[in-house]
Image 1: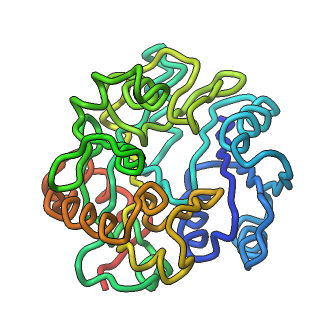
Image 2: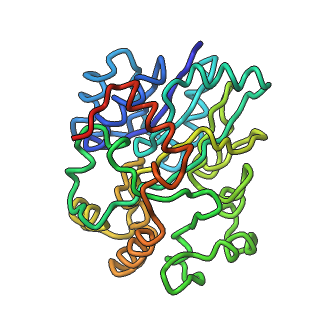
Length: 302
């Protein structure tokens, strides 16, 4: 069956090899929307996935995640998914999964999001560049109903002493937080990394693709891991700037652009480490899927 993956990139050479090697085994075709990369990203795409399309994008940065993804998806039939290059779909056979879901009458599904958190020993980008990061970096936590929106810190919203924005505060302040609230709560539980797998004309995305125009719920048997919570020092080393967000998904510590100070970044990282664990041990479904992928790929522990 037609399975097409979409993404948008800007200088993603660190994580792109891992992301492409993983997803080319799941999707039959891919469309990479390039927002002006000047590193080796495009060469990496051509080398690892030579049959995938590369589409140049020169529009408004805010439109690439929503309007441009809707446009690209509408060119294709079958099942579709749009992911950032830091988001890994945790499934061994998407074909088998979709056959089952179609038999149940499903046409749109939301992933069950997990946040990968760097452990204290991760001090540079080498762990992102190494092969099989999805299978090796399993320290993190389940985001569903445990999410946050760091821009509240930047905008002087109330936060707990540990740096975590209160979920109750977010969900009870729709008039203050606007679309951030509806985006977080769309689709059966509070989370920002629920991504849509569907067979409609397009996702009808909004809110950075964290919300969509279809009625669906999270399927806990379809995990997605986001490598967006790294050591804040990674981002400081690479960019040397706090408040300017990168266009695409590479934000090794995504929250960096949402905080005022370096101290806030480290403060939140410390908290996330405190709520994280080895997901293959603490979440049975996640562990089961990782084991299936290891068997499929003949993965051997180093």
